[in-house]
Length: 163
Image 1 (cartoon, helix red, strand yellow):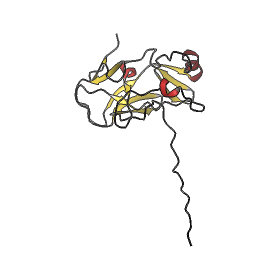
Image 2 (cartoon, rainbow, N blue to C red; image 1 turned 45 degrees about the horizontal axis):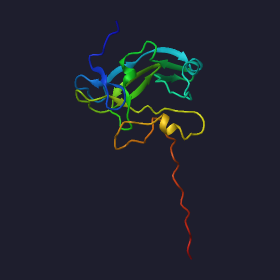
Image 3 (tube, helix red, strand yellow; image 1 turned 60 degrees about the vertical axis):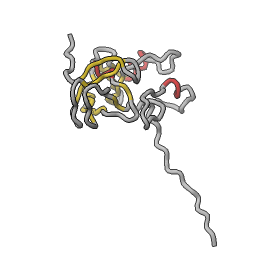
Image 4 (cartoon, rainbow, N blue to C red; image 1 turned 180 degrees about the horizontal axis):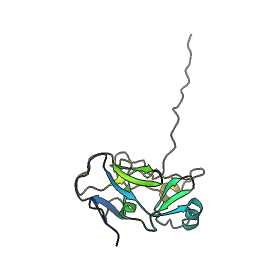
């Protein structure tokens, strides 16, 4: 039997499916839980999960190296149920080939833990991505998608010289 974290519990989420909630107060900067699972190659991840399939399966992959992923669907813990938010209270921190979820602000008991997934897709953006990767966080800062949006370069304005 897997050891459960005394800091968090999994239950139904208002964001999406199941979520992870604080069982007690968590201080800013606290390392809450490790994101665990089977370490697989990028090619193995592509073979198991098809991002372009008609029905997008839930994936619990975390990239930890150029060709290494953690697949939390295989041997993962409750960290895989932490939902995305565009205004999160946690962040994922990499330590070698391990990922930890840490609080970026104080979290009160009963509050859902979230972090920004910042998903990356190769290739040119497609129209169906807005639906396929729709965000349901509902925050004022919601960008509408789980994908990390490319940084926009500052728009240059032409200056007209008057004599």
